[in-house]
Length: 297
Image (cartoon, rainbow, N blue to C red; front, side, top):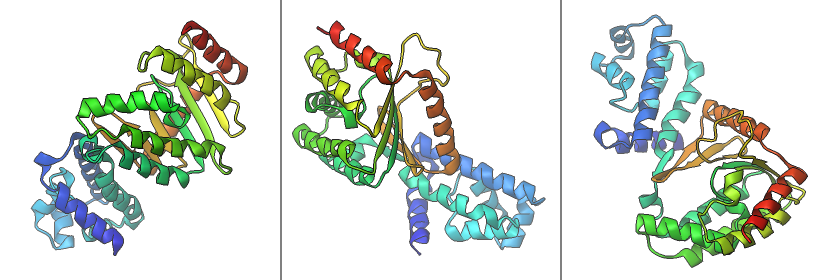
């Protein structure tokens, strides 16, 4: 019943194609294409499927072209008529993920940064294996309060949000406690440029690198740095986090994406493995941090 309610909620919110955000629009269209391939694989025309389902023929085309989002019952009927009930779990998961996969920052952060950080605390507390990649800045769990304040202030100013940076920092520091809690493993990969990128003042960066030199030696932390001159085995296009094998989190300038389908997670796992293969670890990584620290004065 809960799944049915979630699907109905998605249908109410995203049925009008004109108001759907681009990533969600793409997900709806991908779902429609998947339904189409299932129908074709069953040797059915659109009209033939509609007759078997007891629908008007236009209903099939609306689903396949992403003009309408199917309900749980619609998906069950589709799979039954196409003798493809094994496809049903993934189809249900695809529909339910559309609602949560794209959250605009202006909605997520309208009450300030603290709520967002508190939500991350709850999600990360349940995570046992963290894999994180960042290009231009230090991952949140490893940030000092001053570094986090600089980053959050930039976000607040960009999106004209309520200024609750102080409360947001406290919540972020709660997240950092996981580094010292048994039962959690962390594998982080960053590009070397993140060690010196001017996203925060130089004095803040110096203290951040001092702390990072200690963090990378923690027994549950594997910290890799991709040297600027390294051969890249995977393109470092944007940062992302993989929490266990449950979700991939991606933060863009406008929104946060949460990808939950197994093929999406597998794709990002391959990308992470490629990035990790380009990185150096242990003493070589600490040397890069020390060199960057020395260069900042």
